[in-house]
Length: 142
Image 1 (cartoon, rainbow, N blue to C red):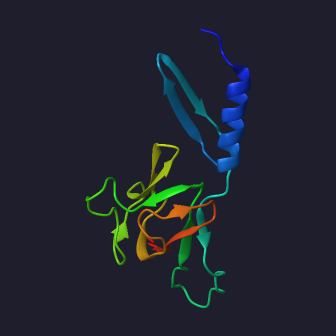
Image 2 (cartoon, one colour; image 1 turned 60 degrees about the horizontal axis):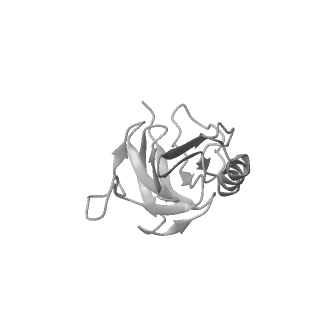
């Protein structure tokens, strides 16, 4: 099997332009699996700056979870299934929040920390870009 370096370069450039971290392409008996190890900022961004500590107990600051790449945003693992999360629901670190479909590849995105989902900001099936606000959450402190 010969490797088409021009095609690989094109696929890698497209992955970088779209913010895709992993791509798997199969054509006939040829399979190409590409992974990018990129340093990116966490998609969890504070909504408002933290207020100065005025007491021993402070209220957590709401945060916005942003899309990390281009794709179709879905709230459930498949059509007709219950959504991963709903507003008002507490989630644990590692619990699925949503899936993103990019070039027929499904990426499941999980909570990075325990939190309460305050609001879902995107509609199911909506096309998103990097930085699109998806959820407003409030971190839970143990």
